[in-house]
Image (cartoon, rainbow, N blue to C red; front, top):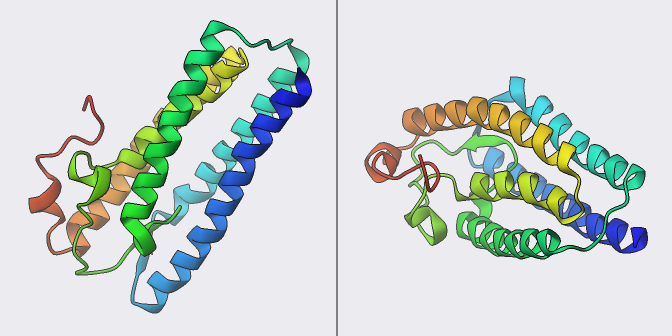
Length: 185
């Protein structure tokens, strides 16, 4: 059972590492084209949070006995749907997607894909993953602790990101002020 658990977690970690490579490539492109980075002070805390999430998850599944339950099935289906939305969001942003907050001044706001409906669909995916990936393995402590920590981190990050977008892009305000940040807010 643990081999299956470690294998699934390894697939998610590998996906994140691939995303880091893509983000670095996009970061270089954006900076070459005049992109301005903001939010540097909280970025290292965000990275630490995500790395700690996987460490905590691995520790909790190692020291408990996860099994495949009906909760696991529901959580897995929710995570799979979230992954589809993640791919949709990232491909919609294209070269503008990054793990850092880098704004290309006066660039038009991306308003395709899930961004037609929400301001931050990728953050919805991150919230969903942090809450539901641990539930696949009954890692309840990891789910609770990191859901709370991630909510705090996103409250900081979204304020910084939206301020930069409002100030530096020509049309973010008019295109996004009526859209919800998430489905519920």
